[in-house]
Length: 396
Image: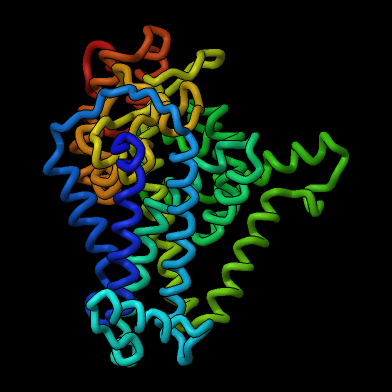
C-alpha cells in the first residue's frame, strides 16, 4: 500500500500543519511555509543521494485518483481557513466547530482568542503558508488533473484547483502549447533560451505565457467559426472560476482575506515559474524531433516526487503524457537537487548559474545531437555568459 500512499501522506500532513498553524494564530501562522522549506527543501538536501528508480505495477489506479481528489479538497479547506482567520464573525459556524474538534483531539486552542491576537506580520505568514501549499501541492495536483483531457471529472477538479491560485490560462497554454512546442525557444513560452535570467522570465515570460494561452484558444474558436470572446473560450472560463474564488474569499473574510489570498497567489506563481525556469532551461529540440526524456531536467529524489506527484520524472511526463504513477524511470538528464530545492535555487541568480552552467555542459556533452550542438554554439555565444560562450568542444 505504501507505493500508493507515498503520493498522499505529504499533502495530508502539510495541510494539517498549515491549518493548525492558521487556527493557533501568531507565529504559528508561518507553519505552512516553514514546512515547505524545512521538510521540503531541507529534506531534499539531506536526501540528495537517495534515488527512486523503481517502476511499480499499479493495479488499483482509483487509489491514485482518490489521493488527488483528497489533495484538492485539502486545498479548498486551507483557502477557507485562511479566509476565516481574517473574518470578524464565524462564517458557516466553522470556528465553533473547529474549537470543539480541537478540544476533542486534546488541543485546547481557543481559535477566536487566537484570531483576535493576530498582527499584520502573522497574516503575512498566513499568505506565504497558503501560497506555499497552493504553489507546490496545488499546482502539482491541478497540473496532473488538467492533463487528463479525456476525463471530465478530473478536468473539473483540476481546473477548480487552479482557480484557487487564480490560474487562468495554464491548463490551455501548458497542455496545448508547451507540450507541443517544448524545446523551441521563442515559440515555447517556458523553454528559456540560454542567457535569459529568472526575473526576465518571471515578468516578460509570464506575459508571453498568457498571450500564448489566449492565442491557442483564439485559433481553436476561429476554426469553429466563433469569436475569441465567445462564451466557449476556455481561458475566459478560467477567469470566471477565479472570480468565483475571489467572491468566496471576500465573503468569508473581507478585504483582509483578499490581501492574504493575493499574497498567496503571488507566491504560488513565484514557485511555479521557478520550477518551469530551471527544468527546461537552455535545452532545445530541432523541428521534427520527437520529445523524449532528454528534453528536460528531471529528478529521481523520492521525497521531491512525493511532494510533487512524481513531477520530478519530468522527462517521462513529456515523453508519454501518462498519469503520474506511470512515469517510468530511465536514464535522463538530472538536476543536482530535487525540484523544490532547484526552484529555490532558481530565485537566486548567482546560485542558479553555479548549478545550471555545469548542467548545461553535461547536457551538451551527453545528450545533445551533433545538429543540436551547431545551434547551441550560437546560443552559447549569444548568451553573454562567459562560461558558455568560451566553452570548448561540443558547445564552444
